[in-house]
Length: 165
Image (spheres, rainbow, N blue to C red):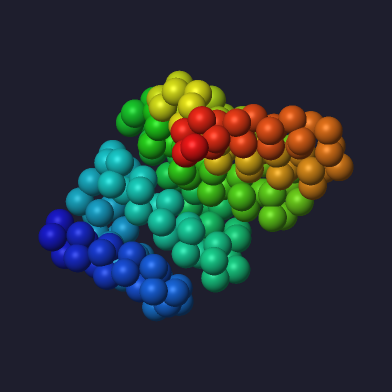
């Protein structure tokens, strides 16, 4: 397990340094080790699935990223439930992928779910709630619903003003 942790840390450091392609191999290795140890019965596996998905998406392999995000979401839902805060990140990642593909209805559904999870777990006045609102507003704007987008953006701004000053 220490080897997986070291590989994951290496991958994360490479990713943060902008070395996306180089980050993939250690991330995949860490995921493989964790899957051999835990199967799909660990939130650590779910987290690794999501991270490899992010890397795959950044490298343009959106089909692979989608599959990894969906697996991550399934593991989290099974282990911590459908409303757990841990689900918000892979759901958000999948929503970004759908938004970028122009699949706005699917992205909207996921962003609404992220918003609901974050509001319940963190409270309505949290910057991550504002971020979820901002993402939702972007989808509305891309769909041509400028009035809806403006309303959502204003909500996000109000939260940020209250929390950040």
